[in-house]
Image (tube, rainbow, N blue to C red; front, top):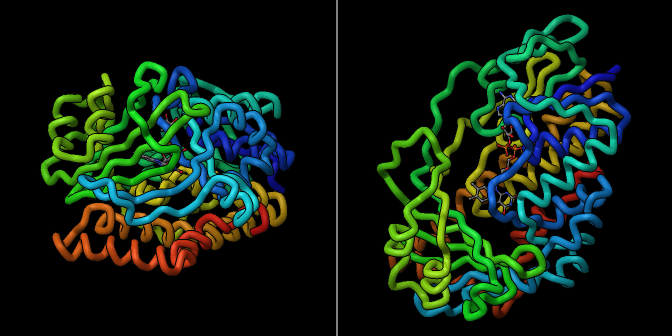
Length: 393
Ligand SMILES: Cc1cc2nc3c(=O)[nH]c(=O)nc-3n(C[C@H](O)[C@H](O)[C@H](O)COP(=O)(O)OP(=O)(O)OC[C@H]3O[C@@H](n4cnc5c(N)ncnc54)[C@H](O)[C@@H]3O)c2cc1C
């Protein structure tokens, strides 16, 4: 029987798992290496599949006041601005998937999850870095820079550079995907002339794309600019980027994009890295979750959504099936799902980046024609992603 769950990492995956496990009645401790709980100043698209879990965890009402509900998902030509795709979200998403499609600031989501964890008696220990573990017959010993603690289950939700994964699988080289992402936010009140439509929009161009969307009821515009780079060498994948380099890289794009980048004062850049896929996420009483076991390119906006789905499925599996069968049930449910989304995310690279020159542009035009004359084409791709309900697995 599971009583005590220890989680390595207080990111979105770790906190969602802590809350979900606490609501199932487990005694939960989260170990976070950082000295405070905080997130980068950037946005997240939270699709209905993730929102269903946040609703089940009773945090969606608190998020409502800081959310933004986009009217459409769009894909536009990088120079002309012509739409290849304009698919309704807003009320249409709620109607179709029984949950909203929201944009959230990462700091807001982390703060709401953190508060809810405290209210549900989760013990969160900061400045505590997990360094390894030792499986024992009836418990697991978790090793940290502050000493050892024991648990029935250790969850490694410690991100793409997961120590838990390394302890489980050994040293693995990081895989650079050949792409870097720049991120920034812009205060709309200070820049009323930007005229960004109220949509989740991908501006698609050769070997790069840029995504725009609003946060916090429209107070902020968030952008993610992705470009292919063969020569990225930095192991440190999160650093301030030179805004002029970013502007130069997107010069000649549609005025909506270039004006947006002119309005931005600072941007952060990091490499989009990956890890090899794993056939198993568990070792005895230890299991992986979120980016620790399935990092993905952000081109379906599903990385955090998958960690949130994992959290619910794991806690429910442990409650219903106990430790051994529960952990197997969790990974059997989650490995195929996350692999499918990893593959979809990767395949969007060639679509968004017009790979193949004229052929790439033709593919986007085919999307335009297909979705114009048969709007259900977009649903065929998105229904399995957004329609999934992790609370029913
Ligand atoms: C450009 C970009 C845009 C994205 N947009 C979206 C989007 O719109 N929608 C979406 O769903 N996803 C998006 N994602 C993906 C999403 O950001 C990640 O999938 C998600 O944040 C992963 O959460 P996590 O909790 O698994 O890991 P992390 O957020 O990396 O958290 C790991 C935590 O573990 C801690 N930690 C690490 N090692 C240790 C240790 N040894 N001991 C203790 N603590 C430790 C870290 O300090 C951190 O707090 C995007 C990603 C990128 C790069």
